[in-house]
Image (tube, rainbow over all chains, first blue to last red):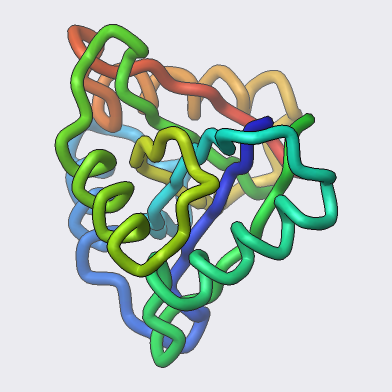
Length: 81
Length: 81
């Protein structure tokens, strides 16, 4: 079973890395983009054949405790069976 | 219109950052995870009201040219209207 965790900066937090990417893209002549924000993405493979709800709970826990800084970041978890 | 770009290391490429996260999670007592791989995630806001296919083409181009190192990384683009 696989899980995907998406970690993004909260909308109120400035993203200088995304701004730099946006600026570089504009310098290359692409002007149709209004904003770029960078986040993190984790693909997690679960070892045993846990149920979907157990897997979701386990992944939610590590997403919250380890993968995300809750002061500045939000996360989203998806389970793929 | 928003686009999401997911950049992941190719399966054949080693991911020491993911391995370090996996090891840390195990030290915290979570043994149900077989593997963790880290990628990048970009949320791109498109400025003008381009059609879905134009937006997809523009985002595919920058995903390929700017956001991804094609030697070691794969990418995936999703358009949200």
